Structures are given as C-alpha cells and as structure tokens.
Image (tube, rainbow, N blue to C red):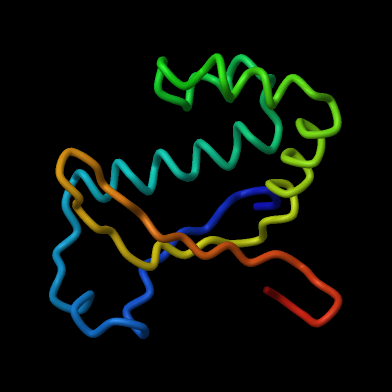
Length: 110
C-alpha cells in the first residue's frame, strides 16, 4: 500500500539482535515511529506537537511554525520509503532508538 512505512529489525549489523525477543515495549515503539512518520508526512502542526513531550512543545512550535521549515519537514517525511530500527539503548529513564530511513536520491537509496 502506497505511503505505508515498513519497519524491520536489522539483525545483520549486530549479532546480539538475534537473541532479542521482541517485547510489547519494542512493538509499542515501532507503532509510535510509524505514527510519527505518518503524522509528520500529512498531519497538521497540532498533531505533530502531540508527538513531543509537553515541556518541549513551545520550542518545537516556534520552529515548526515557519512555513518553510514545516514544508521541508513534511517533504522529508513524504520521501521516506522504508525505515529500519537498528538499535535500542536504555539510558536511565530514556530509551534511545537508532533508525535508518531509506529515501530516494540521485544515486539510489540513502
């Protein structure tokens, strides 16, 4: 289906991924990233802001309210053809995710 993001785990870059059992938390993260791409691609600013922590929304709003920035962000997310979740690192109360997006370029996919 056109416009549908595809997330997959990349076990080729780190053999430790082969031993990981996907948990509900990881499934939730993949769902969140899919939603984030979809909202950034086609959603209004207010929906995009809901993706951010409430304490960061005013700063994000200041930047994203610039029509050129908003449109550039939208075009970037519209260009994503697939995404791979490469790694998750638990860092105290935070979870850090490394995601690789495939986008068209003059030389193939980036």
